Amino acid sequence: MPPVRSDDPPQAPTAPRRTQRYKILGFNTPAEREAYRRDSLAIPTELDRWLARVAKAQDRPAVDDIKDFPTFGINDFIEATIRVVETQESGVATVAAAKWSLELCLLVLPESGAMFPIGPSPWIILGMYKGYKTSLDAPEWVVKSDEYDGSAFYQPRARMLEMIRTQLDSELVPHNPSRNDILRWSFMASSVHNARVRTIVDKCDEYS
Image 1 (cartoon, rainbow, N blue to C red):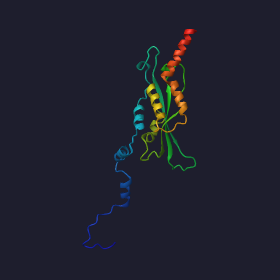
Image 2 (cartoon, rainbow, N blue to C red):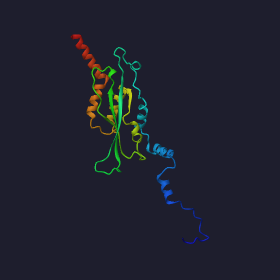
Image 3 (cartoon, rainbow, N blue to C red):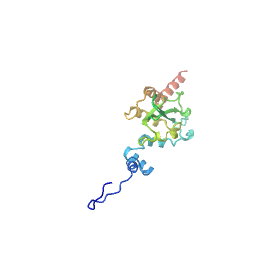
Image 4 (spheres, rainbow, N blue to C red):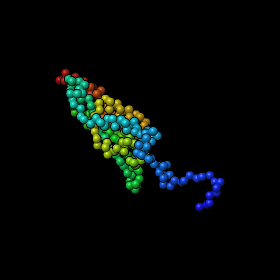
């Protein structure tokens, strides 16, 4: 260590290298980490906030509470099931970042007043992410994938169908390979299609 002359300015003590690295790359508390995710990365995202809100509606609606047309006994709610798919690239070590997709499957309830069952919708991709669950930029639906995967919630049918159509037309949403099938299912699940079928059936009854 070189000698220090009396006319040299005092030197501040040097922090250990590990501490310096932690200060640069880490956070002192979980609250600091979440504040950075919120303020700098805009996480939770709009999709995260929507999912957190609708996921609370897990009780199947009672028919008496939401009849749109008492004559028909219509329950105008739709059941939505969530799945979070994690895919590892083939031939890549398990330490490689995974690909994640947030997907939704819709089902018109039997008491909806539909003239005939149409079955569940194709799986609809709402979001995609590549990285680790513990990554700083991981969306909340990836971080909470164990909580969301396989859960179901209920929302008004018209609202959900409108949201799906809006999502499919948005450039911010990942490409859905089954887009045409999803749009075809959405039309068959709509009240417009059901009203047309009901009108045709009623006319057939009149002439029978």
